[in-house]
Image (cartoon, rainbow, N blue to C red; front, side, top):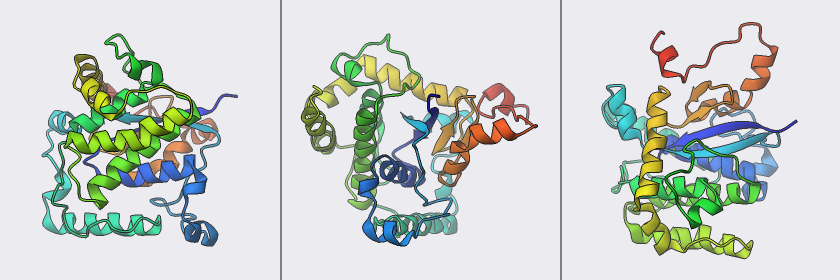
Length: 280
């Protein structure tokens, strides 16, 4: 039986998406888990920090832009920042989650570069999730929907996504700066892929491709797919049958979705279809 597919929808301006990205990186590369956390089992059972078992699941990374999503649902940009005490709690909450995952350094106050201009980073990541052939020759005819890639490519994507988040939030570096993205791509995409015998453009060429109409259109269409699916935030997860889960703490629920549905008599219909969401 082939593994189930789970789509991880994320935005680089979303701190909670960053936590999910790190958990998935650890799940895909268990050797990366800090020894203290692994030995003590400190994360076991935590809905927001536990590291999932992906042996029966293929994860598809789906970057998108939150701006059009917020606009579609009539929500102000950065809704968590609208209430000062809630904004303070957000940074505290994310900091302790990253501490538990062995990644200290998240600022307890709003970063000087946040929210970033995440468009170029999002496009580069979307391009990477389309697979090696697409990156080498972007085409407007490539399907927008996420495809399952092999483990080697998925690991490269997971590493790049985490490094962008790490640079943005922990390094307090502006990821809207294309030179920053060039360096990240070269170190975490170009060099590792080259070592594996896969030819990909270097960072400067990748930035240029991300500015091309094919990649712009693909990322825009992917974001529109999120809008049409009734998304309202990030991270979000979609299952094979079209159900949607929202929030880093719902990762395990999303992963268990198929098994729960198989055992359930209720068979809840998918939430992420906009027409169904409108009927709630």
